[in-house]
Image (cartoon, rainbow, N blue to C red; front, side, top):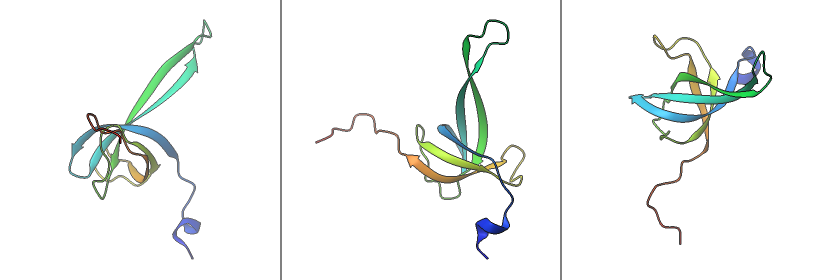
Length: 95
């Protein structure tokens, strides 16, 4: 049996890395919009989650896919599945 067929359905999100808080730990911000309950105007919201980066491959500004997992520490309940898009390097010349 493959690993994915034995697991239950888990939540997954796509967000942006906003902080590297320590060894193998990152903060991922997930932005979304909701309608205001009274005025029906779209309001921007965000959720910040702590995630486990086992290989220390994420940098600030990277777009990552994360998946819900068992509690890994006091705050970490998510883990990085893959890096979808690397952040552009500031000051680098494209040639």
